[in-house]
Amino acid sequence: MDEEYDVIVLGTGLKECILSGLLSVDGLKVLHMDRNDYYGGESTSLNLTQLWKHFKGEDKPPEQLGASRDYNVDMVPKFMMANGSLVRILIHTDVTKYLNFKAVDGSFVYNKSKIYKVPATDVEALKSPLMGLFEKRRARKFFIYVQDYDENDPKSHEGLDLTKVTAKELISKYGLEDDTIDFIGHALALYSSDNYLDQPALDFVKRMKLYAESLARFQGGSPYIYPLYGLGELPQAFARLSAVYGGTYMLNKPECKIEYGDDGKVIGVTSEGETAKCKKVVCDPSYLPDKVKKVGKVARAVCIMSHPIPDTNYSHSAQVIVPQKQLGRKSDMYLFCCSYAHNVAPKGKFIAFVSTEAETDDPKVELEPGIKLLGPVDEIFYDNYDRYEPTNDHTADNCFISASYDPTTHFETTVNDVIQMYTKITGKALDLSVDLSAASATEE
Image (cartoon, rainbow, N blue to C red):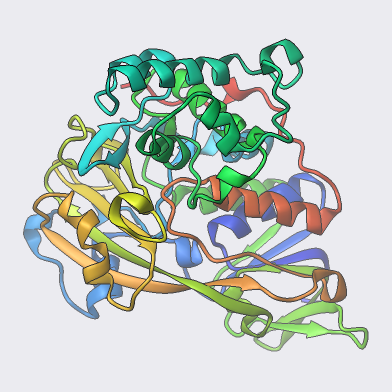
């Protein structure tokens, strides 16, 4: 195995697979290994029997839940923004040819104890029961400002320099109420805390525009898309891509040990007595536990149901964001629902997740406000996992470690980590100017 590689990637989680694909397309020689005998690492996809084994040990699932193979339950479920960075990466690497996407039915927000559709345009703002009559008009004006805003056209800025004016200052110009700011910041711009209010408003406005443009893309009820059969398709699609570019994938490689030279830099990876040489290693936190620190914990519940989430307009696939203020919490709660319409469960069955950044050690109690919104469930599993971030200096050891997955039910934070890692590994910015029409979602 004395081959030399530019990069060895350890773990086949979503982030590692995307990076391996990007680096392969760039012409680097990549070896990709995983200690498990399946793709996906923490972000793997399980059938019903595997799900049962994962949460209950050796139990056999009840027959009334249907065939095990009809379930594709993603352990880290996230929807993709139709015009977002991940879709751009999938087009840039041409992985789209291995995947079929379908639009997600609905995007909702919990506000004042009820679930509402997230209004994303001036027209929707006027129709939304989220706001009273006068607030609707104010919100409509704000949405029009955002829609018309063009970074390169100073006329559209209305005298505001959004690289200096904060989001809070921009919003106060339109006199919006706290509940309105809450749903715009958390369910439209997808911020997971309120820190953005004190930052320059440009990023906030760009995020709102991305949402509105993605929403317009498939004329669906949401700006999101999701692969048929779930995210488990992604690692395998990237593995196929990597093979096209001469990369090598190896599953079931136990004890991947990273070897260092006298200067402290990576020189290779040893598994089963054989060493593959390399200049750089990319991995998830589990492969280098001594170079990461625990930064938090995610609490989540996985549910199997026989109906969609109530008050989501019978959406077969939907996201509901519960902003922290609405529950008196320090972090948002996320509801994710997908069903047989995306081939992730047998006919008539729905998979729902409730996830949040854990603030206590009791996921059952902590997730209860989200679980209450689901209505009756056939099965429920509780789970929590620690979140890690790298502490090493990658310039000193050439180890590039991804951060653990956060509780969000959309891809924006995950893909930002990937883009930053790409720049650290290659020393260049990732070019994401692609023809978005190359990714289409199947119409029913």
